[in-house]
Amino acid sequence: MPSVFNCKADSKLSRLSSKVVEEPMNPDTAFAKPSLEENFLPILERATQDVFEIMLGCQVTCAAPSEHKLKGGLTAIVGLAGALCGVVTVCCAARTAGQIAKGMLGDTAESEGQAVDALGEMCNMIAGNFKNKLAGTDERCMLSVPSVISGAEYRFHSLVDGSSMETVVLFEDTPVAVRLQLKS
Image (cartoon, rainbow, N blue to C red; front, side, top):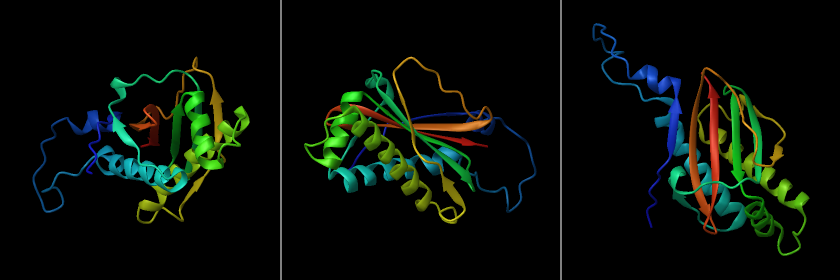
């Protein structure tokens, strides 16, 4: 069954690439170069699908970010350093994180701590799977230890000159947002 991805991408890079610059055409400029979003978003989507399939034995479906509002909960963060500099975040409701923990650990996963650990591990696996899918970055990019923020009332400010992209998947009919922010 083919999946359709409706994902949001917003960045300074895409706004800059839309400006018309008149240059003489040569073999190096004859073809338009895709933006980071065009290159990285499908890889992020595939990495997310792969991790849910491997770790939880389920296939996730994609949804438009505007269709499903995330209601507080938990946000896991994993930093990227080296060939890629930025962060991967995974955000979902606390109840959804609990369901992820149960999928990973079985019915014994009852505590908030296990939900936090499970979401951090999912974020770590998605970040690792993403970087390993990029030729030449797997050994030149390091991941941080996952951190998890609980609560809904926060703002995340990062990488002013960076590129940001997001995919939202439905896990058991509840949204999970996966974001990639890269320094340009």
